[in-house]
Length: 189
Ligand code: SF4
Image (cartoon, rainbow, N blue to C red; front, side, top):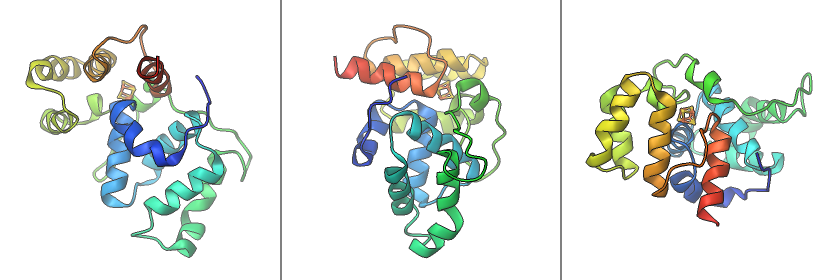
């Protein structure tokens, strides 16, 4: 996927129009709670890296997002290392790549966690509420909920893409970053 730089002041807007539901859910949970647990930070942080957020911007983004719960010193102590780590700047210097759908769908999600795939991990009522808050109308709701219930997570995600863009994706999207790239291609064409 493209790694054109994405400025962090655009993330709120992009989350509403170009993020797949898994990343939108994480972004909104982070904004609401000023916090995400480690698995959520990894899933979302690597996605952001994949859409071209630089290490410097990522540090600023997470520091601001956590600022209600952790001051600058606490952030440096508890969280900055892990951001640098998944950029390959600390520890074993592994350059982690963003998670694909298969990994996300098969992750385990506990209470108070927001990572994973909403089509797989949310119960029907929560998914319905989330989709309603994203502007999905009743006419498309049942189809998406039924696809999710039947374990057709990619098809549910593809339908969500179609509803959000008024046209289907040109190919199957098996990676949240591929979803983002396809969305940007459609919305900026
Ligand atoms: Fe995210 Fe993939 Fe699930 Fe879509 S199918 S919400 S991109 S994990």
